[in-house]
Length: 325
Length: 315
Image (cartoon, rainbow over all chains, first blue to last red; front, side, top):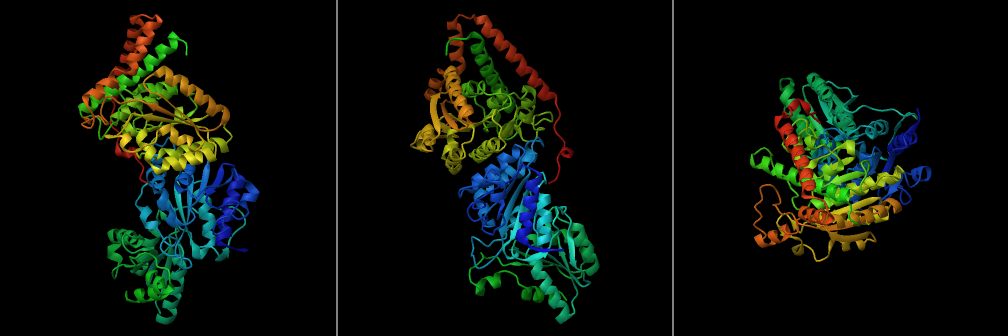
């Protein structure tokens, strides 16, 4: 199968959906005539579909979110690009109080097809306003779905599902993944939400990771096996909401140890949520306390000397998992 | 406009419907049947009636948290509105959300937000959608209060409404107070002038004179329909009751309230009808008809059941 980048895979999902359904549109800053997306995801789409499908906006995130909610209420399927995930703060009211609650508040008279694409994560020293992973902030809001593709294949398949999900989807992408390549079929395909994947089988410890942290988890798993003989099972839930609890629980029953690796902050994070689910339902299977490996509770610094300490890398994952034995 | 007995009687009927609806909700609130809060628009009836009688059933509406009149005039049944007020299952939103968030897809009422100013970006989005879908026979009427015009969203949205040329008729119900704070303490610029800064056609009108509201909104709605561009109308009015059903309005004087009560929009239209030559009997029979509708709706709502948890889906 051919190899394409994560960025190209996202573009293919958008392009195929736009060809199939004229109600699919893109809205965002610098997505059309200017940059074609600061990470190049919408490259070529403006030329192919024109200004009525690829809609450039001013720097006005409230307008972007409002435009998405309003067009969606009329039956369209908007895909929003928030230039950096961090900027979602500016349109947080639209996410929290409007989009997320439309289905409930209208007694299901209206529901939204609405994807918010969010380039997140630390990339190249972009500092505290352009580097955050914010997934855990949104887990607690009923009415939102959260997707976190970790590779090009998942990026295309999950985005295809997101575009017609009939609920608002926060689609967290990662800057370090845009240029990574993977095998991706040319035709359209959809990956269902709530179905995780075992990426590496192992007998000794379960390591759950999302998005770019899957790459880090796989590096750490290899080192743990080669150097220390620890056999790590790596699981990518692929979507945070809904969460595939079953795949994690089945693995914990086998390995009796759970670690959760994330780039979001340690406090109140994904590890806290997954950890508590496993504690509540599967405590008897655990041989040791659950390990939460996450970004430390400080804003993301600029220089490598600091950020590499804040964000978990393979070295820290190896060290922390070894402590479980 | 020249005197037109049928139209003037319709003005009366619709304004009286809102008045009676609001008074009934107040009564239910005093009996402890309205949970939380409800925002009534007694005194402001001409703003909803004068504008919405120029709006078609399949035009879109975005109402405010003080929007019962707007929602009734758009065509939602009085029974399902009343049931929603007291959280009953046959309410228009299943009794889930109550007074502030009436949505009715069957009459293209897209709902009302509890966050002041949140409706502006969505209104621009609906207008954008009408343009993108090439729907040329519908517009959006989007209501808001004076208090909302000091939110940043207002300015961002006016700018985009102009840039995208959206077919949206913005209607400001300026009742002078954001909760208990007078507009003059919050801004030195008149509201309709804020829109003209963004090249949006805008005007102000006496919001207690339903005939004037009808004529002015007809002119602006025709403009929005024909040019597919936004317009904004500021209607100066007054709520003669509190901000919410439980507000005893300590922030304003009795004299001020009495002064506005003398400008009551229903009293004004009754005077005009009588002057036009119609009999008091005709006015009384219109009111009697409305009284029956309200009593029927209240009876229906009171007898209905509360929704059960099984009707919700975990998300």
